[in-house]
Length: 465
Image (tube, rainbow, N blue to C red):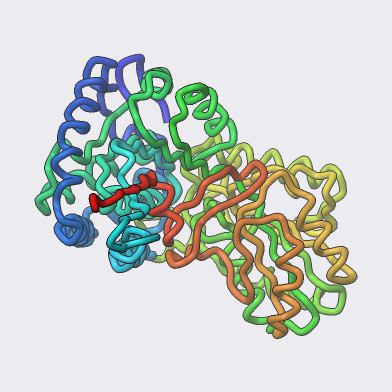
């Protein structure tokens, strides 16, 4: 990711060349876009809910029609192998669910409807919502807010990551082709300074940001004193815990896939695993076999199962965490020679599993966001809970047992936004996607997502007698 003072450039992790470049919007251009969006929003909010739902569904369908173009573009921009087919399945699942529940989620709460009074609480759109989306799942993370915000009657301005520079263009193109008013949903190429200035000036009524902890702090500082609503989904260091009664094969398959898929670049990817002593050796042995079978290479090659990280500097950070851990006594159990595409200087990073790790090591504390996972042996639930909570982050936790009551009891003690039992690395649109601690605040999707994308208005109407 780079660019001159006037442009943004997407540097492809495949070969380090410039894949796309776009001019940065000036402050006056951004102001004009905001004004146009606010005008369009008034008419949009007055349209029947069923019309808004239908147009959003049509926009999502148009994204699906563009999939043959989108999938290779994603490989070029952020390195995900084409064999996985893009993100439309998740985009469609999430947007469709939010469309399905919209009428129920947005209906008024009737307190009294009598001859004397009408008392009710209604939900109104905020007005203009800004979505600042990340590169790792660029369509799915954006649609989490874009679809329900539009359905609820808001206008949306999308600022996408420079690493996935073309995604905002493609999304807006799809929705406009489906019949959405052009000013209602706009993609802007903004630098950080202009973005912060717009937020400081209260250009938006709600800002949803998905990204780094540092980025979230910058958003909060910009919004300070404006009373602008914020949704912040920031870092993660999600743990898995395998108990003695777990289905071992299922646990290994799911947790290792959760750690390594998308080159480990998942908000809710598994970054640390705790295994009860009796299953530890078998778990590690099975995990090594899985990872040793991966093929690291060009994401445009259908044989590739793990592509480069999105940017060389991301790979370098993970290399540093691995190196520091090894120097501190950890052991890498994956042979780097199996992955010759990683020459130590590029975005291609060999996956690694670390054992003999502990929480003094950054790889077990800091967000790695890469294809590495540390595995620790634990004695019992008490030790596992303590270690899982020993983190600045709290997005998801994955526990593996046949005992639902035990899983729920452990879950109640975990400082996290979502507790999974016998699954991991999945976003259920029927449940609120949220976190705690440095993972941020707010919540997307589900009925709660609509509550965050609207404001309440109370009506207390005394009837003439």
